[in-house]
Length: 324
Image 1 (spheres, one colour):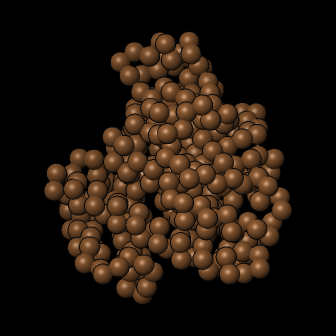
Image 2: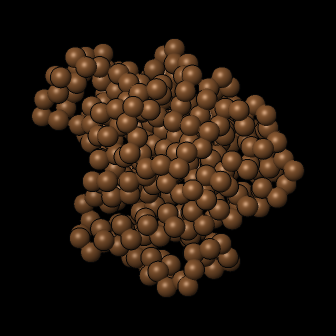
């Protein structure tokens, strides 16, 4: 009954959102998407991958609507921030900036926990968009000596993003923006120590699996891959990534974590298998040689640690007024 009630509510919101004349930020758009997020964030027993075909189709359409609305929201605030002398002094004007702080912190903590000694000199962020907050937070707070190559298929999005760093000499020097489809990148992928894959790069399961397989063919052995996914009802907002697709792409899956609370995206930490391991792939699974334990909801110690970290970060974010 709980699942049926949730699906009915989300179906109604999908219908209302579908009828909007525009998804650009306004009171009605903001209200409907706030209601949608509020419905999807609480822990739910729903497994969206097992819903009936009609509901699955609705979910896929809803994810694309969310992607469109998110792009318009980010473009709006990117233009707003670009109007200031130093855009980075006004990041808290974006209503969800604290989410990026918490998510990037979680990703960094999981990376250094499952890949000890990681000190990347070059990182790629695929699907950076007009507000590259993830790269910004990682570069400013966690990886101060790392160069970030940001990739997005939308040229205007990259142009907007570049303007945000014009007053910060250090970050401007460490942030590059490239208009490209990740499927066209080959040799350059071998130069990165870590590749981040944004949640909305490859929205259908098959598309996402193809992107991961492409990365697996061209990333360097031992390089890290961070994939954003979703779990439970949050799968109505973002695509769900099957860890098996990541393994089939040539990676060892080191951690799968489903946060609760403000952070919406799940995080998957993987590492490109070396040639010897890749040659030993059987039935789409990599051998477990050298693999570390997977952190999921049954790993209570990781869950408690990450939840405590998230709560601390939310408190700190409020105290700092989200400023750099």
